[in-house]
Length: 500
Image (cartoon, rainbow, N blue to C red; front, side, top):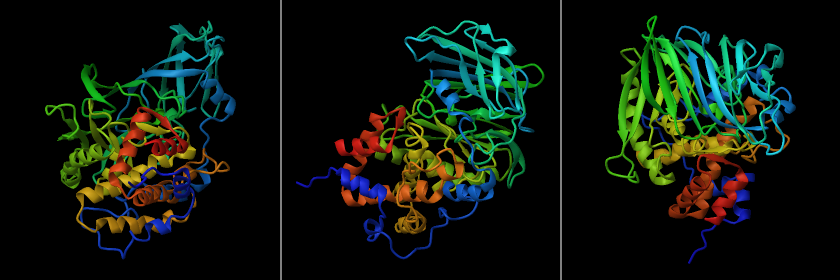
C-alpha cells in the first residue's frame, strides 16, 4: 500500500523551492492553442495575471496604498465584529457619482465582553460627503465624527455600546470618490465606456483596498460579513447587477427603479459589488452531479451591454460556464453558492474580478471565465486570511484554468498552459509573501509571477508528486469543507492536506 499523505517536508518544499524537477516530465514543446482558448500571456482577453502585471507597471508611482493610514485605526475597527450589511446606493451609468439618499446599515457586535465600545471606526473615501451617522438609532453629532484624508473615520456614539452587545451603524453619504490606487484595476468606483461596444458602464471593484470608495467599510480579511443586501437605485433605462439573488425590483418616481439584491452567504468586504448599465440578460443552467436533487440547478445569469455584437462575442464561453461549474463541483465539491446563482456583469476592466456569485468581466475567454469561476471556491468560499497568503486565492484560480482545460479542451492544450506559466513561475522561490514584503502594496500582492504563476505550478507539482488524483482532489475538498465560508492561511492548507 502506498502512503499518499504528503509530509511537512514535501509540501513546504513545493511551496518554498524551485519546482522545475517536478514539472520536468510535464512540460514539452509548446503546441498551438486552439482558437477558443487564450494564452495567459496574451492581450486583452488573457488571464488576470497579465492584467495585473500591466497595471503594476503603469501605476508604479502610485501603487503603494495602505488599508488604513494608521495601524491604530485597524485596531479600533477590530474592536467589533461585522454581522451583516445593507447598502442602498444611487448610481447611474453616466458617472461615478453616488447620489443623494445613499446610506448603509451595518450590524456589528462589540467583541469585548468586559469593556464598552466608545468609538466606532470605519473607512470611507475622503471625497464622499457624510450627511449623517447613527449608532444604535441615535444620531451622532458632527463634532463627534473625526475624518482623515486617508479615509479613516471615527464616530463616538452618545452612549457607548455595552460589552458584548450587538449594535447598528447607519451612514448617509453622497458624492464622488477621490482617486486612489486601492484597487488592482484602478478605482473602487468607476464609470467608462465599454470597449469595443461603446456602452457606458458604472461599476465597483474593491480588491484589495477600495471598498471604501463606495461604501463605509471595515477592510479586514479575517472579518467576513454574515450576509449582504445591495439595493441599487438607477434610471429605468438601466439594469443593476450584484451579489446573490434579485429579490425584487421596485418602480420609483422620476423614472427610477430600485434593484434589490441579497445574499445569505458569508462574504468578504471586497467581494460585494454593484454594476449599472443598459444591460440585457442571458441565462443558462448548470446541473452538477452532486446537487441535492435532480430538480435542482444553478442558474448562470449574465448581464451584457445592449449591443448587437456583445452576446454573440460572449456566448461560446457563456454556454460552457455550466460545464465548468459541473467540473469544479466534481473536483472541489458542490458549487458553494448553489442556492443563489453564478453570473457575470460586463464592465470595461482588463480582465475579470470574482465578485461573489457574479463576476465582473471585461471580456470573455476560456481561461478567464474558468479563472474567475474557480475563485468562487478558492477566494470566495474560502478566503485567504491575510494578503501574505493571497496565493490561496489566485494560485488556486490559476490552477483552475488547468483543471478546466484538462476536462473540456482538446488533448494537448494543457502543455500550452504549463509552458506559458513555467518561466514566470520559476522567477520566485515562494508563493507566500515573505515577512519583509509590503502586503499593503497592490502590485506586490498581485504579482503575476509569484501569486499566480508559481501558485498554480506549485499545486500542479503537488498533484504530480502525489500521483493519485483521487487523493489530491479529496484533500482539496476536505480543505474546503474545513474552512467553509471562512478564512485560511498556507499553514492551514498544509495541515489540512496532511491530515487528509
